[in-house]
Image 1: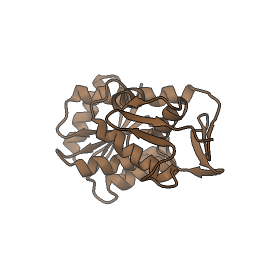
Image 2 (image 1 turned 90 degrees about the vertical axis):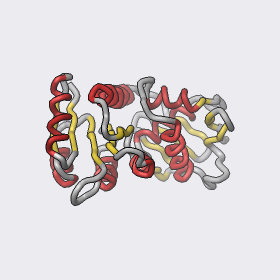
Image 3 (image 1 turned 120 degrees about the vertical axis):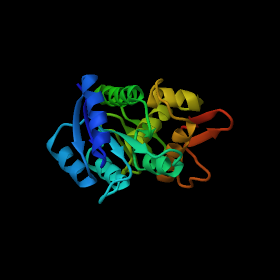
Image 4 (image 1 turned 30 degrees about the vertical axis):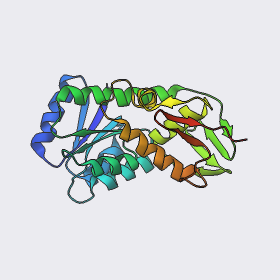
Length: 229
């Protein structure tokens, strides 16, 4: 059973979501503010947070950042207002796994929750050897990345992208392939989500993000990892 925390300041929306989660055999938790959400997370085993970005007090961006720092394996689906692209991009950059735009279909919400939780749990069970490429070391078992022995802080999605690319150096992945592999075939978003994560990754691992040595763009197709010796 998925344990889902609903962070939403409007009570009728929280209750509507909670009813739909319960009907689909999920266990809902509720928080009306960012502060309340962090208290719930501290005392319960939560699989996923459904996070509205417009909250009183601590806003959704700050909550997202705090969750990623303290609970890196919890899934996060952010909820944004219609056509607020900058909200989506900023939330993704802070580590959200997916986003939904209000108003949303309850069955779409259920599908996305299950997709994110399924991927998170699957990735936790895999044990593989570390990948070393140039100055970069990718330790899948600890889900950590190092550059010259200094840890680089990545979001879960950033880690999944770098690992997927680096374990198959030289192979060109289309944007759709990467979305399917990392976000799942039932992902409803677009390639902009991937491009935002790639840009953030380059800023963290490359000497010069504008002229990347590791993550190469294959124009019109997608991305590939260049194995640096």
